[in-house]
Image (cartoon, rainbow, N blue to C red):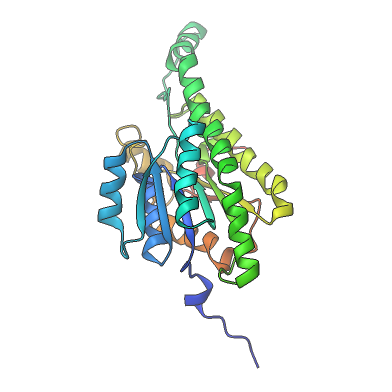
Length: 287
């Protein structure tokens, strides 16, 4: 008798306990809503509690999206968030490292001489821009992952004992197509380099955590509506630089996160998933 696959079960995230950093706005909120609206319990973490509470109130379908104030650049703050979830559940199944910042964004200019290029590169990004970019986008991802390791492991233990969850625990790091671009329109060198580092770190964690069956994957979005892209990437750039001629939508990122978080993506580990409407194909890249 043929084995019949039920899409409702294959892509189900019911029973999943997930944490999404930077989950109050933009792509983070899109992913959090996709998970909660399909049966997961989701904790959205960020520095601005009113923003998180508003997001949870407006985007929760089953009342299982919860706001937790936390700062990924503070180890003490991260441990406080972990402790709250430990007391409530004792485990998680999914950590989405989405919190991030962009500093030192430059537009492309035509330079008449080397001094004008030198001047732009010197002034567009300060040493502080570099430090803040790496602190949030790399160091914050590292310590967020490490802080939740025991709860991710407990998710696997619980699964093995009671078979209550269909897939092994997972860390998903939200990087960017910027990590693979080599072009010079518009761009931020601190942001780009930090996303290169976070992408590689996501790959490293797949190896570091393999003995505990904690998976690690990376999502690299292109242009999606967010506080980061508002006013920085105009519609003209979307029409010119994206083959599909539109920004990403809720259903685009929702489909990807539901795949990775469900049984359908349970065999996926150590991979990078680009979702950019083909934008990367328009630039020189390293991918």
